[in-house]
Length: 304
Image 1 (spheres, helix red, strand yellow):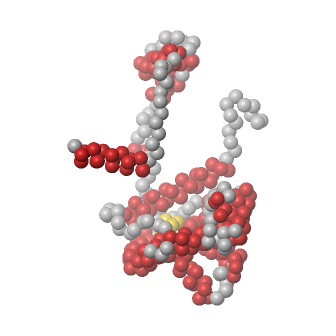
Image 2 (tube, helix red, strand yellow; image 1 turned 180 degrees about the horizontal axis):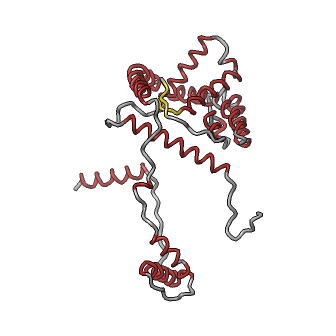
Image 3 (cartoon, helix red, strand yellow; image 1 turned 90 degrees about the horizontal axis):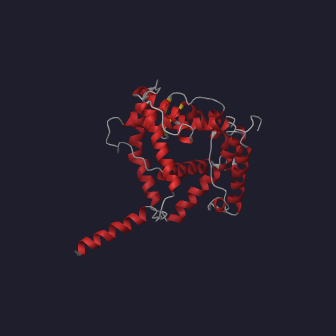
């Protein structure tokens, strides 16, 4: 009995620790009007399915019957409606070779270095991560301007100014506390904003899954950083520049939980390729929706 009680308490506390616990009470009785409306709507839907007129032809629920009938009569979703698993991969042989090389390099060098880095005191790891995040605001400012998203550009510029001063060269993310959240972007997003397709799948050495457009974006972002040369970090002492790049790469790897060939799937390459390209296409759809004019609200004049 004691064991059962202890187990029940442990499960209850574990559930409370892993999700929100909310208690809501229902009203003591439901108004009769709601019951009548629900019954009428159910009758209208049943009549629509059966192809018979419902009672109360002039009721609001009966007006939705044709729409319900049309929805029921519509063709069901078929496998042809699902997105294709095929991904344009004309350099598949080279990509697979690069994928295997990245996996070996990751296991032999990258992951051990990242694990050692993560053993450093938490304030050090967080400060280094904030520092490189602050440097990336330069790319965000330039690319938001190129995307004509000037409000976002001003926010990124504000984050750069606040964190570079009050945040001690970006070691502390003070801007987020001032309700200026990070929203990074890059040259690949800029190309996508202006209609460039992600292009064929591409596995970049040491970087991993990408597309042709993302590869161009990596070069564009480095060009921006090199051109701006904030605090002379990219065109100063070569040893300092290389050391900065290595620390940035290890920090980025330490914050990514993916491990090569840990999925135990013989189709890991295909799965990673599909998920990455599908993610980029969904992000592009979001960029296009921001550029589309908003449809006027129902009942509003067309000119508003």
